[in-house]
Amino acid sequence: EERAQLVAEAQAALYPSLASALFRAGARRRALAALEDMARGRVAISIDAANRLIRAAQRRRDLRAVFAVLDAMTAARVAPNDDTYEAVANAAVRSVEFVTGAVSMETLPRKWLPEAAFIGRSNVGKSSLVNMVCNRKALAYTSKRPGKTQQLNFFEVNGGAAAAGAGDGEAHAFYLVDMPGHGYAKVSEQLRTSWQDLLKQYVAQRRSLRVLFHLLDGRHGPVGHDKAIMKEMARLPSYARYVIVLTKADKQDNTVSAGVMAATITALREAGVENAPVVITSAETKLGRDAMWRYLRLAALDRSGGGRAAATPAEHGYGKEVE
Image (cartoon, rainbow, N blue to C red; front, top):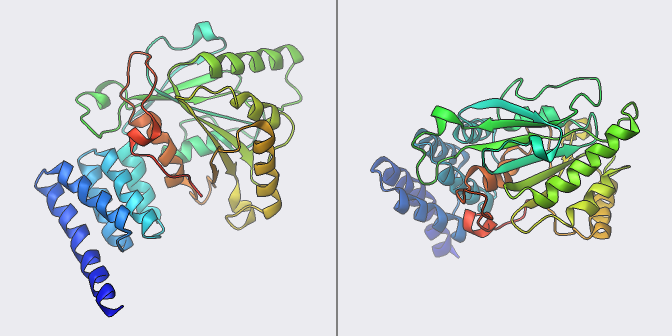
């Protein structure tokens, strides 16, 4: 037992220093291999050492390496802090620009980029969460008036000059899609029906969709049209990932009740999407930002291009569910 402890301490001292030295020497593949060994072996790592490695990866604009560090932290049960969140967001998002608002499949952007879409009830905190994830104050419009988003708003991340020369492992250009909020009573029945039709077409036909985040108020769980959306997600093609996001956890001490979690899991099972991961978040406290990026990387690191189906999550270095 004492020998095992000594080995663990030696690994904890050696691996982070080795990975850091390899990054400085430009030996990226060997540095990644060291980080992957850490995750597999659940090598202990301090939060300070982890954040130094993330900053080193960030300076090289190497998002894949950032996630390799996060995986090592998860394996070692090391909780991220504000410095971690900041470094991840800065490595993943170098620029964001509004592109267009689409009201039909015909008005969607013609430029092919992988997409990460966000959908949820009006006032569920969707725009605030998008802003939090991207480390921006006003990327998506936030309003106290429900139903403000009345089209599919496309934001190009890392586009133009920011994406020029993006190398292996770097965050590439992709779209964030802010979808219309549902469940708002003052929207006409005709408009509500057109949104529902557009959602069905978008989910079934949009080959560039890589991940769809369905936001639920963490205080209430699935209500109203949320269950219909869950059923629609059963038709989501295999190249896209469906993720449940419970928002506003700060209203309940950064957690959700057992009842809300049980109701969410039951609704997913009844809709035939019981394998969907569930992420707990708060735009106020930044809870869940690293977990969100574990799924956003399916778009940020996608290089399939040209409308082809994306690589599998495993090929992106993604293999674990968020707990």
